[in-house]
Image (cartoon, rainbow, N blue to C red):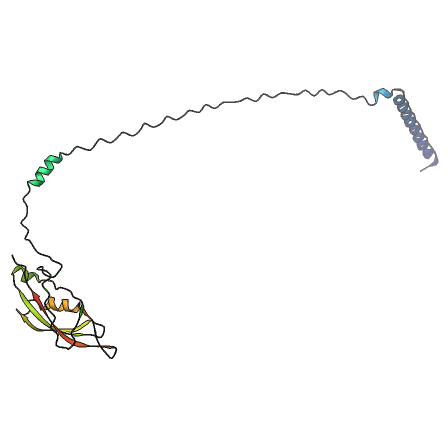
Length: 210
């Protein structure tokens, strides 16, 4: 850069600097002369806005109560006297009078005979079951007896029953065997130990007297 041009640029810069300094000095002086205008703030008016809440009432309809259920019609009246009269007029069936005695004298149970034992000392029956009277023999009004031989075990139960004699034969045998198997006796004791023994029993099948 040539010297004349450098001098021109320096002069212009100096002028600009002086001008800026003067402007700034004038502004500072003006601000100092009017101190009340610096902190002036515009008043802001805050207005409260009242909001009105709109209350909306919802109309609710109360549902109607359902009508009560209808009462069922009363049951028809029955003529009790008429029904009783009809029942009384029914024919009465002819039912035979059957003696079902518990003691063994009825037609279905049969009479229990005496226990005839061949062993000494006798045998004491603890449980005695009456046999059932066979239906065919009952309808035919047949009577009879069965002699059964059997073994009394060491515990008093009956085993190995067999028919020794019967009158009439094969009519009452099955029911006599069934009854004897349900008997229970006091066992025979020898030296403090129960032993088996053989015994006989005669079971009679008798119809009740008319």
